[in-house]
Image (cartoon, rainbow, N blue to C red; front, side, top):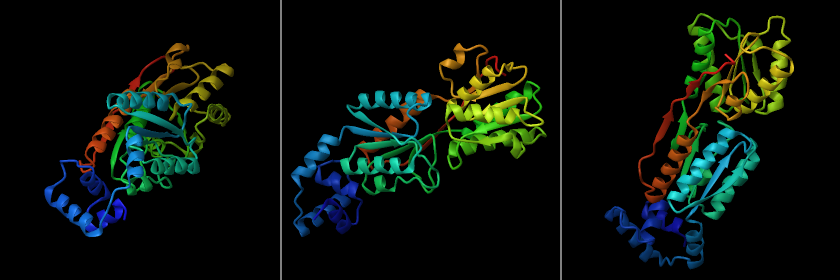
Length: 328
C-alpha cells in the first residue's frame, strides 16, 4: 500500500492523506478520521526510507526558466532564492532554453525528487504541462507565461498593457509608421504584448500590417536580422517596439552599426529595464517589469502552498511601467 492508495480508499487527496500520516493538526477532523480508518483497514505502514527522502527534499524548490541568459529571468530567480532563504529552503535551477523536452525532463526530475515546490516559466502555452507536478501533489507557481487549462497559483504581468504603453508612447511622440519585433509564437507574454500594441494602434486610427511584424527567436542576432529586414522595406518603419530584452539588444546594436540616429531615424521602445539600457547613448526607452516583486510573490505563494495544500488558489497580475529615455 502507498499513501496514494490510502488517499483513494479514504476519498481524499494524497496531500491530505500525507498530512494525516505526518500528524499535521490542521486537517479537518472528519477527513482525518476517514484517513485513519483507511490506514487501519488496509494495514498501511509508512515506508521509512521514502519518508526520509522526502524530509531531505522538503527544503528544495525547483525553479525552471526558459532563458538563463535573459536578465529578466536572472532577476526573478534571485528574488525567488531570497524568498526561499526566508523559509529555510534553497533552490535548484533548471534552464529549458525554450525546449519542451528539456522542460519535461526538469518537471519529471522534480517529481522524482519529491521537491517541496516548483516555480516555472513554461516554454509553450499550448504544449507545456505541469500536470505531473500537480498529480504528485507538488506545489506549483507559474510565472510570466500562461499554460492552457492551468488554474493554479500564478504571478503574471499585464502584458497586453505593456504593448499598449509602447504604442501610446510612440504615437504621442509623433511617429507615423510603427513596427514590432516579437518573440516566438505560442508564448502568452509575447502574444499579449503584440495584441496590446496592435489594439492601441487601432484605437488611435492606425493599423499594424503584417509586413511590419517580425516573429523570431529571442536571441540578440535575431534582433539584428529583424531590424535590417524591416529597414530594407520600400517603406520602412519610423518607430519600433521590441517585446524582449535580448531582441532589444540586437536591434540597438544593429541601429548603431548602421549609423541610424535614434530617435530621429528610428524611435525605439524595448522591453525590460536591463542595466545596459541606461548606460548607452541614447538611453533606451523601455517597458519595465517589477522583477523583484514577481520573484518575491512567487516564493511567498509557494511557501504558503507548501504549508497548507488546501489553501485557495490565487493569480496575481502586476502592472508594467514605461521608463522614458532618449531612444523615443
